[in-house]
Image (cartoon, rainbow, N blue to C red; front, side, top):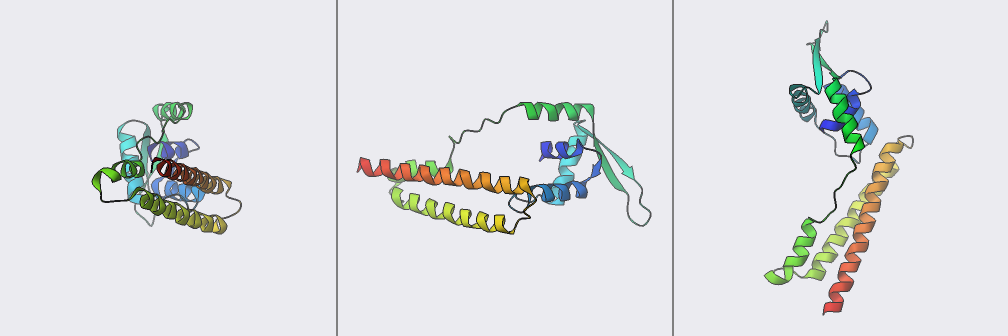
Length: 171
């Protein structure tokens, strides 16, 4: 959450609730929505670390609000984030641990585990399809997010098929 908030502040000052709304509008309903409390806690941490600065702004009929802006250190952290490629191979996969350990426990069948996981992925794909249909057609970012998730799920389904083929050859 830290770096996405810095990225939103790169375009100009904003308060916490405004940042929450901007994230929701940008990413659409497929992305897990952060709660406003999480936003404000993160903003406090960013401010303590010197990446943003907050300024209290008086409002006539409401309590003061704190508006945040990016510092030079925040802009540099954001630049470094954009320059660094993501390297997250899925070697530590919880499902694969279950699949690998099932025969040693005698508590689960590997093919049954694969079928259960396949059903889960297919259900998730159906939910994403519904979200895509309901999402504003002009929100290309939200549609790309959903499409990326669907492609990852399709790759996971293909991998499950490969696992099942390998296990059948071992029998």
